[in-house]
Length: 463
Image 1 (cartoon, rainbow, N blue to C red):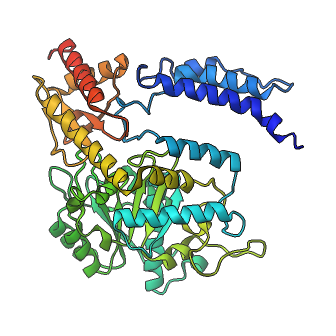
Image 2: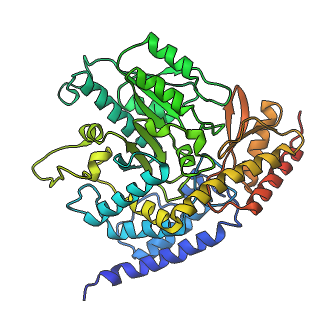
Image 3: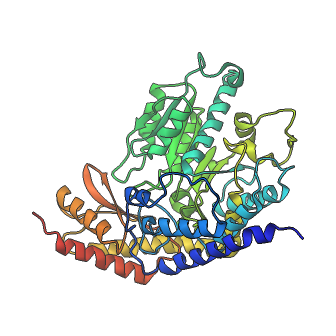
């Protein structure tokens, strides 16, 4: 009999115990960590010991040193940075992904992982009402998903211009101009930097961050030529959506590739109640979103979706003598992301979708939006609290009078730890930004969070 179960058994049992203790503590524990990174670092051995340590003891030591520095991101009262929780089936599937240890690059080498990811991709395209023929790549997150979509766009535009990007690179190539709203997410700028395309041309937007189609048309007419247009499904502060139908028509009339940054907001497309806010989004050329936000799978998992598979695969495929690659059909996983080696991120996505079903995904997305509205209504009833945005999806931005008071209240909330809401600045003002992303958030969490803000407001009067 193989010694494998004995070698792994004790360590996995201890991991299961610690994971259970952690999950049991999340609903009632303080959301914030009790130790910062420097304090946690002091509890770690400064020098690696010469001798080996029993695997189960290592797991116990790891759990003990990490616990004070863990943020309860899975808490129903965590509203920071658009971070979701974890559905049970997705978490368990992620454990299996580690146990199976499949390097998900080639369909030939890891057929189970490839087939399950392809199934998840098909379900996603159907749920999001995107073209069934699109390619889906499972990335680390929305930043990389934006990179993938824009890389496919760069490849397509260069091919259209007759420029051999693979052989000649960017030096001397036709210049590609990128247009995006003034309130785009920084991930778009980062992706453009990675791609060597330079800064985008900022296009005027309204008070909610929605791009003006007429302003986009004027900007593009002033700088004709190969172009990428980046639209936004879910503004970071307001949750608002660019007018997709009009903006995509403007861009396509001028031969542009249209990419949609929908890190959390693209999920509104699954809901019959919310889908109208994204009318026309299916006509874009590529889309980026996260599964570890609104879908609530474990970190890390982003989704890059490209309507033109040939452009995507030209951008990322490679052919060598030692790779047994697929020349037709759904393609190999490594042809859809900038990684030849990666874990099977799509398997937890499959598990999450299988647990929820179509109706469950719709219900979860609509519940997140309803909780955001409930938070906004409750907070607006507190004297001195101003809700700054139209709450159209899962984002709520508030202020408390002066910038100084808003900053003090935000710091107090984070220090007290009953709830976690992160600060930001928007429209030239300091704000408290609330992102409702966790599947476990319920009416009790909403009420407790409103009460926590009320207490902080009362403790921090205007100077």
